[in-house]
Image 1 (spheres, helix red, strand yellow):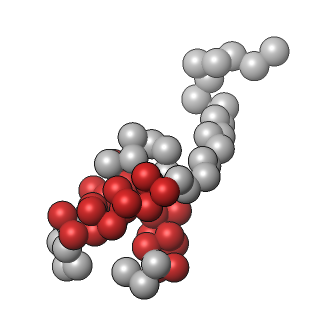
Image 2: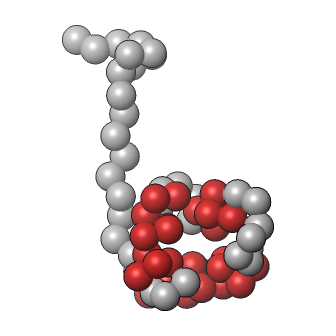
Length: 66
């Protein structure tokens, strides 16, 4: 049986679907955290309380033309 405290154990969190509310929040966060801002995408992703990872946020923003 795996020890839940073991450092070698990997925990995978499933990415959630993007809701209409998530898309609106993404738009607002892109304005609040403008292009050229250091760690922009990390700041935007933090607004989603771990529902969406940085990679997912970047991918969605690019698909929206941002």
